[in-house]
Structures are given as C-alpha cells and as structure tokens.
Length: 120
Image (cartoon, rainbow, N blue to C red; front, side, top):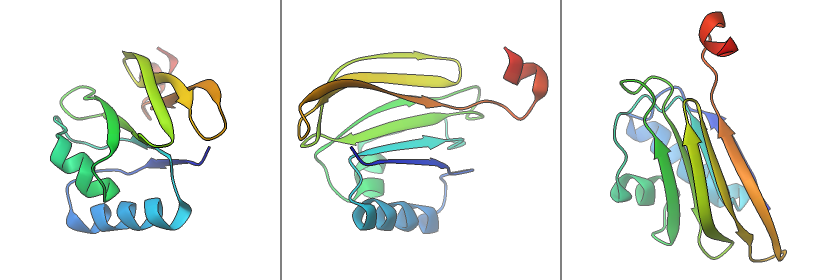
C-alpha cells in the first residue's frame, strides 16, 4: 500500500493543491494523510480537486477552529472503507486493501507543538 503522509501547514492556496495532486499522481498514492490543514470544513469538491479524481473516500477531523485539523483520503479502487474512529488529533480508518487482500487500519495523527497539548 502506498501511503503519502504530510504536515501541509495550511491548505488554503492553489499552489499546495497542485503540489498534492502532483505527489499523488507521481507516487501512485492509494492513501493520503494530511495534518495541520488549518481549515474548518472539507468538501467533496476540495477532496476531488486535491486528488485529481472523484473515486475517492475521505474522513475529516476539523480540530479546534481549524487548528490541528487533519484529513485522510483513499482511492476506492485500492481500499474498501469499513469503519473509522476519530478523536482529538487523530483519525483511524479501518478497511480492506483490495490489491494485496488484507484488512488494515491506517491512523493519521497530529500532535500540537505545545508541550502540554502534546502530552494530552
């Protein structure tokens, strides 16, 4: 399974969207985990634009007012979604990797730079 994991430090600009699209296509990503998106809402249109296709599943955790927000996306031809668990600073996605035929869980984690918050 090819997983791309990035602390994107804000997803507002078109330049980062093109960069992500380039990485996904260049690396043949099946899973994309982004931390610190700094956005408070995530739409299907944004998901499809970032990936460059519309056969994509995704889960978004908005953090606190966009701070610490994370998103996990996957290509539906490679991964069959079963369930998710999300909490402060993490998203765990359970599913089945279709190409290699195994069940797995991918966990996308973001920890604050603030030591007190990181410990929690």
